[in-house]
Length: 462
Image (cartoon, rainbow, N blue to C red; front, side, top):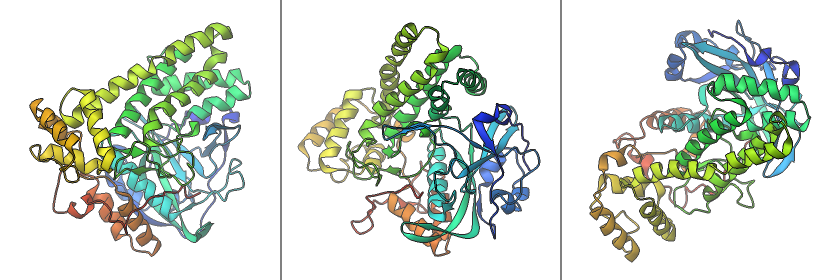
């Protein structure tokens, strides 16, 4: 089924708890990602008979199941021990030199569950499948979803009883900023050194030492967050335990894509202060990177000199991000003028114009001012100056999708799934795999929510 070579399991046992998933009563496969299985070089037909593996009832040959330890800053507050509270890493599948973590999310309690049940409700599992695969289709680095499996068991959540499910998640790795933080907080320099060597070997083989890794992660996160911003995506919970060393988007909890654009937009029900609003994401990325640098300081020699060096490295993030953002916004308007792009965003915010459809309209009908902005004097002036700059429609077509996973469509798929109808989930997943073309098949999915359909709050589901 998988070809495992489990490098993380060969680290000392204080990095994790070796344990198997907790079996469930009646595993039933909801969906298998055939395209991802093909990328992984795995026989999809064989996987289709693997509901017991995807639910955690059977451990595949070669696996070394474990729950990873990490810590983190959550909404700025320090949590000294977090870890995989409802996930088990089965192992690392290797094919053609590429290494894939295969993890079961919702697989039962672990020593890191913090009084939780270790399970996942069906809704959040469907949500992560939809969002992560949509992000992949949009060209954004992300963890992937290989399968969704019903457990046959019920989980209790604040909104009431829900059917349980397990997400089989695939990633370049699940090493987080918080993985370094936990060993720094415990003053375990030996573990820090081993983790550093492991992370460099896995993700940054050309990096030299702790600051080499920091530079690598900085560049990856600058690219990632700029691409989030260019799609109107709001992660919603950018805690340090949700920032990967690989530069992949991870943990699609209370995330959302903006429809009506505003830079201070927040969807997450738990982000009451707007810490992770759309406009704050670059600064939060830097804040998280500063926590990674702090964790790496014990490996850098005398502290005063180490702090100076780390500060100098971190000071380069804003330039890295600015360059990535310049590429993104210039492509979206087809003109290499960041100020012109930012001016458009400012105009859009006045009327909360639809983020995706406004840029798409400029791409497909450049001579016409997008709907909702036609009567805006600033927009008329901007539009004339933009046309005079001769925007490159070909470039714009690669940067402005026709379709995104709109919140009301995601919610529609979830609620239908709770009722036992997976057709809306399958259809939404299907149309999101081709986000760059307008088709009759995806026409209804391009429309913004009506006031009655609007989803203004999103939830973690834990």
